[in-house]
Image (cartoon, rainbow, N blue to C red; front, side):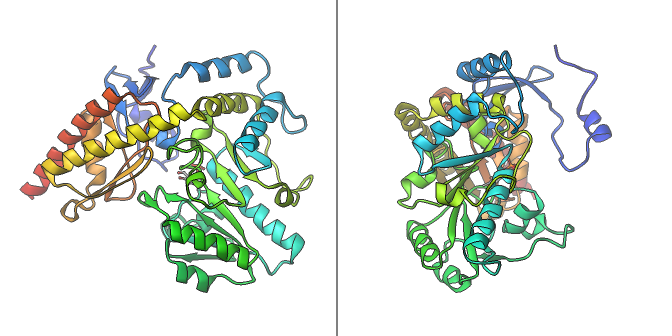
Length: 408
Ligand code: PLP
């Protein structure tokens, strides 16, 4: 039953105003569709910002959650538990990593990665080796350390003083990176594809040079795969297609398919710097989240599902190109699996939020990456017919935005 005693107005009354949600309140979902309090239906191209990799109410996830809910919910890290060990085994069996630290979000996974990189360098070399290098426009989370490492100054403003020993260089610029690195560098952190920064992939040459420079300077390479991991790009993790293996990898978002969980994966020799007491979190590795995440990985780590991601990527791109042929609205369409960005032409710059709002009115949920890029991160198993129907709604929204632009 929908609770009509709460509405968008309640949000302004009782919620800290750091978000500005639209008027609608979704109340239930199924697959790639959502329904709001008024029972209006939406096609979901947003996937909870690259989280709902198996859509809404996937039977395997429902089963895993309810089975575990009937056993034990929480033990804390004073005790270990079966689901956490099974999940860690699954992650280490399917990646380069040998050991895993669990937490509850992407920011926490990155916080752990940055702390571990500093501790590892401190233990082996000394305190001077503490600098972290990151990239302009990168996004790594909203804790104080992760906004400081992130490459968007607006997320740091007003929160100073921020942690020191962090440098930023342009993404995909080998020479700038080379110039910034030194014996003081303990780690470089990179998103294999910048998500919030506009769906920008790392050049293969850049990724290889980055690995070489890290080796040359005895620095760790951290891949933030919070957005690109868990099948999003058509591989279990994006690094698997790059010919470059990181030393630390962070995951969250899709890992829980909608249940909050984060993970930091690494090698045994590096992990050893997090000895007993050096880092921790009460909820990290809790049985409910781990049981769900294992069901997510068991379902996603399947060649047929991953091949389906690439097929659906093609369909998305074809549909976007068809819209572009008719309306000449995009200057670029970028995609890696089902992480898709459509950059608006110059005359529509700044209009991405308006297109998003128009699409929602027409029953389509989208995302933006900055003011000029429409971003789509749907379920990895979104039915083809939902893609085609959603695209028809997007085309209408774009036509409306163009009309406004031409009238002004
Ligand atoms: N890293 C990347 C690449 C992300 O895209 C995000 C979230 O958008 C984060 C980290 C932060 O994750 P969370 O919001 O779960 O803290």
